[in-house]
Image (cartoon, rainbow, N blue to C red; front, side, top):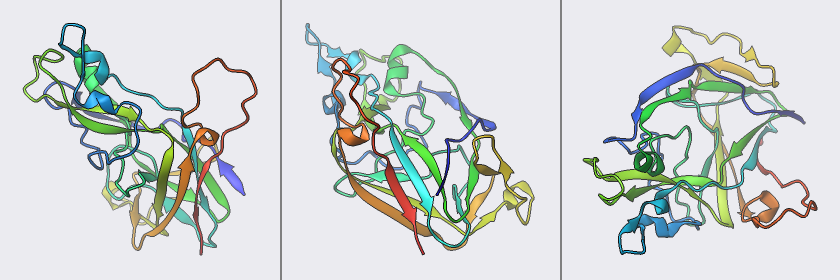
Length: 257
């Protein structure tokens, strides 16, 4: 099976200024679900020594990246990508053990951490692309092992806000998660006045991109449910490295006939 590496640099889109009064990440797929998380106490803020809320509790939490391989085990060409124009993002979704979708961080900015720090700036994100997967090919992507949850900042942390709501990046802890992906056998490039779509553009890392391509027609779905633990890099100890760690496992989402 041929593996393709992570995507290369893409054309950028400029989003509106992040943080400030508009702090909800508009690319969120859901409110966050009920996954086991490492920092659930951040929802209300941790009281400081004098009883005031600690703004540090709204800092982003980073997990160890989890490798996700999406494979085409069918006998037809498949396309991975979005259904509508926008920022490029992961070609898979993640749900927790209850089936609740986790809000993907994507190209996030304007998180609670940014708002508290006053780090308000325009956001850049790669424009969406469709990836061509020939039979037998596989593309490798990364999941940050984290998701976005809506928080409410106290005035002491961001007194200038009209809306105190923002999104905090929260890391997951070991548990059961379902990874799913969707693909199509045709693309729509009419948004760029191209019909049919032009041939995909080969990338140095082995991928083949159709810039601005959208999934078209009947969608195929594939999913897998796994117990994420230290073997996938989730919940690894932060203690001193002994040098005996082997390679972590990858989550595999396979499209089959």
